[in-house]
Each structure stands twice: as C-alpha cells, then as structure tokens.
Length: 60
Image (cartoon, rainbow, N blue to C red; front, side, top):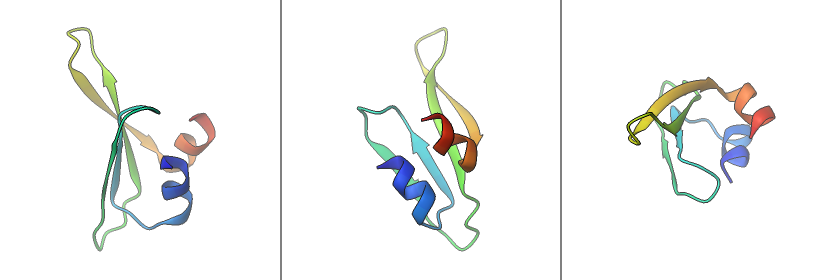
C-alpha cells in the first residue's frame, strides 16, 4: 500500500512503520513527497530516517 501511495499520489510526508504496521500520510499544498522510515533505535524507541520517495519504492 505504501509503495502505491508513493507512486500515485501527491503527499507531503509518508511515515512508514513497517510492512505489518499502520502508516501515516500527511497531505498539503507543498507536496514534498518525503518518506520517513520509523526505525527502532538502540533504546528501542522509534527513530525517524528521511528517505527519497524514489529510493523507498526501489528498496521496500
């Protein structure tokens, strides 16, 4: 679903928590198309990592 959203919609940010987790999409006039991967850090808390939309589609 996340790949389809990235390839087919104008969005500002997409927060991706994992293949088996919910995702969050924000929409506004800027259409920044930033993909934010939420990855577990050393402490176990989620840490955001911004990724280019084109890279996201080719990796995930």
